[in-house]
Image (cartoon, rainbow, N blue to C red; front, top):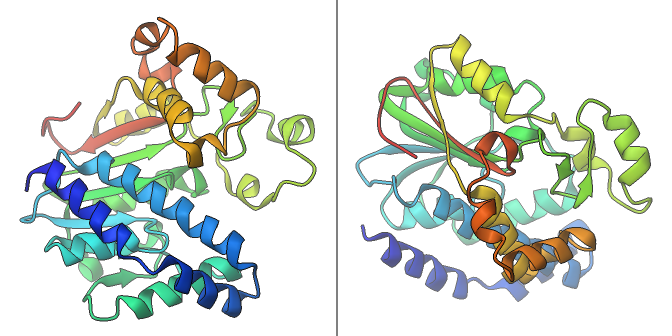
Length: 295
């Protein structure tokens, strides 16, 4: 399918979502404010667009596809509706009432769509149980998996010999934490937390971070005979998004937002494009068992 047409179909899909009704249902079930719940949904919806951009050049209806860390499963529901053979993986870990309630409300809404949802962890993927996939992808998931190497090995275990994985996540070689928009020294997370994390910040995400780096991923792939390519220009894309995307901009305020605007509205953007992937964040990596094209 023409990727522009697929992106347009996603926008029509999003426009038809009953966000206000969902927010009311979810807030009632999770005992949360409806306005905050709607903002929560909008954040996930915004990330759907990013996830689709991540795979739009390589997605095919002939593939068997696995989305790892599918969250509310909205992108997987959309792709399934469009005829893609996709499976969603989102562990049923519990402990986050708003997320759990939203997932249930959305699953009820799309109950007519036959989407297979796996509730195991990525580390528990097994080719005997789950078969194999041609494309495996994730967006902002790897940094939250404590045993990320074990997870990648398990994903490789369910990957077809001719298939590949595409993952996007922060590169903590760069001393910046994008979820909170604060500096971080990856070797000293406790000190970084004391110095930079706002006192009123929810610490849940921080506690889940593993501070993965581009160098670590490259070394992992070398040890396990995986071909790894990193996409160039991601720092430029992120700065551009801070400058133009209001929802994304809200997560990156203060000095970071000012610096992004300065870079993007001057001639420095062309230089940022040239920064090596190992020195930029986020990172997008394509992993495969053999040369299959890519970045």
